[in-house]
Structure formats: C-alpha cells, structure tokens
Length: 49
Image 1 (spheres, rainbow, N blue to C red):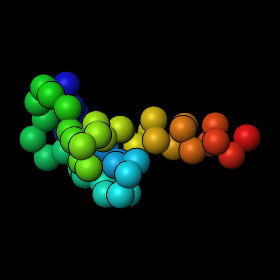
Image 2 (tube, one colour):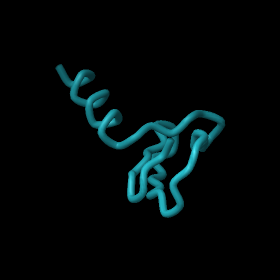
Image 3 (cartoon, rainbow, N blue to C red):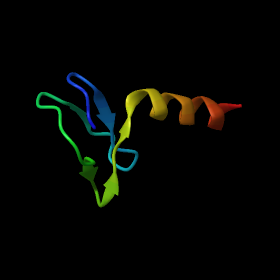
C-alpha cells in the first residue's frame, strides 16, 4: 500500500511522483515499477561504494 505523501522515483527517466491518494498497487513509469525514494537513495549509495 502506498502511503500519503510518499515519494517515488523512476530509475529510467528520473521522474518523481508524490502520493496524494493512498491505496494498493504499484506505480509504473517507462514500463518499470517506480521505487520509493528511500530505496532509490540506498541503491545509489551502494553503486558509489
């Protein structure tokens, strides 16, 4: 379930989306599931190490 004001990021194009109506399901952009910003930040820090 997506939470109110949760931020999602597209790893393909960089688009970011903030949830204004929480609910079930996944957000998709560029044919791939968007990731919560916290997870996207963790992925970037792992790549830089």
